[in-house]
Image (cartoon, rainbow, N blue to C red):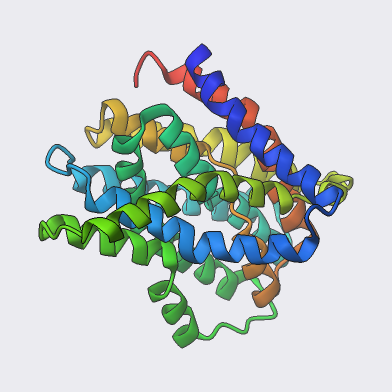
Length: 308
C-alpha cells in the first residue's frame, strides 16, 4: 500500500502543479502549448528510443502480453455497444465521447507510474504494449465515429498517415529495431537521448495538469458517470482476468492492470472535435477521470496485489 501511494503522489502532485501554473498563467498560456508539443514530438520519443534500445528483451513473452491487451479492447468495445443499445440508449455523439473515455489511456501517466513502480524493466513492457495498443485504439475509435457520429468526415488516408507518423509509435519501433538488431548508438547520441528522456516524464505530467478544465464537470450526466466507472473500474478488472487466462503473470500482469486503470487521454478531445463528437462531455470525462484516478488506481492495485 505504502509503495503504491509513494509512487502515485508525486505524479499527481506534478499534474496539480501543472493546473496551478495554467491558472496563474506561468510562464504563459502560449508556453504550455509549445511545451506539450515539444514533449510529445521530442522528449517522449527520445525516452522510448533510449529505454528500448538499451533494454534486455530476452525474458519477455510479448505475444501473450500484447494479445491480452488487444482482446480486452475488443471485449470492451462489444460491451459498450451493447450497453448503449439495450440499456442506456446514449445519443450518437455522446456515445462517441463515452467510448473514447472508456477505451483510451493517458500515455504520460502510464509511463510515469510504470517507471515509478518498476523502473526500466517496466518502461520496456509499457512501451511494447503501447506500440500495439495505440494503433488498435485509434482504429476502433474511428470505427465508432463512423457508426455513431452523424457529422462523419473521416479521411482514411490522413488517418493512416497519422498512425504511421505517431511519434510514440515511431519511438517504440526505432528503439525496438535497434535492440533487435543489436545496434549500439554512438555514445554521445545515446547520452543525449538519456538527458532528453529525463525531462520527458515531469514535463509530460505538468502538461496533463495544464489540460484540465474543471469548469466542464459542473454538469453531471449519466454519460460522464458511465465512462468514469467503465474506464476506471470495469476495464482493469476485465484486463486482469483476460491476462490471467492468457497466462500473463507477475510484473507483466501488473502493467496490464495499470494500463486498464489509466484515465483517458487528452487526445480524445482532438478526435472528438475533428469528427463531430460531444466536446463538452469529452472535456468533462478527461478532467474527471484524471482527478478521480488517483483513488481508483490505488484501490485497484491494492485489490489485486495478492495476485500480481
